[in-house]
Length: 422
Picture (cartoon, rainbow, N blue to C red):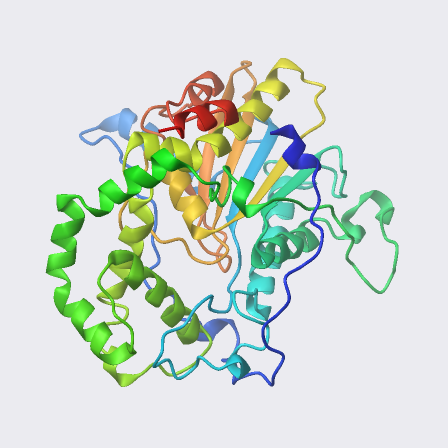
């Protein structure tokens, strides 16, 4: 997959509309976060005395995501993130906001707040991994030998990557301001590579896979999903009667939920017929829809195995060759990318739907005793600095690098191709 990191984006998709913008809602405090999810950590109970104090102390360290810089050295960091807030990718016949004039950025494009979300994430990462950060790994400036950026070919992902990099690598943060090239502009261009949609087996995971398609259809036809459909027939009927479109699957509901959520975040008043149905009835199905893409082990390997392989390969290179210069890898993707990876790590939660700008931090750390461990954190909001540790069931704390490398869901590109054959 090394060739993917050496391929650059050429050209951009044209916007659909350039008309006057619709009314935009106010600044940060106005944003209503619907159903923020947090990854739950299972902690062994029935501990007493000194043992309990030790566990509590370790939990404080984990929640803060910190250890003393004297105890640990950061060798490599992988950051997977969802793009920022965007405009809808689709609408429905009776949508009062289906006109292009409400979405001057174009359909499926990053909006201004989405740009700010990813810039803020970049600033956070600079403070964590830059000079003086608890996981310091780079000197403040951008170095093409140290940092690699890979994105899907969606405009919103490419632009999100660019916004993040603007916050993480401002020229003024370089040693002595050596990378300042235009004093009035604290920004510098950073190369962003991308993968064509039909070749993407790693981030968007849209490369055709015949076996996976059969597996997914089997999941949709399963008794589990059929039961969910039966239990929500009243919802499907209500949506069909009022939207001007027929709804009869979980996937249909997910697409509608995404559109309604974006319209709500935009400050647009949703139709009265959605009262009591959105978000209460729609969100659980939208979350379940994402989880169904990786319902079985083979599906997990297809949708996230190559991404985990890429991370493990770079970590292994760093361990075997300490002089290896690659330090930071960025993967700009979608909500499905993050859910697929969490499912592949064994963190199964049918209610998890990542917010815009959610990031997963995968850190390769070296301790004073020589151990090299992998720590993973979830940052599910760009408006908060809270990190939530991800404990891999098959590689519990401390997760040694060798344990991470042996995850059963890791799949090489060659193996991926073989497994996709019918």
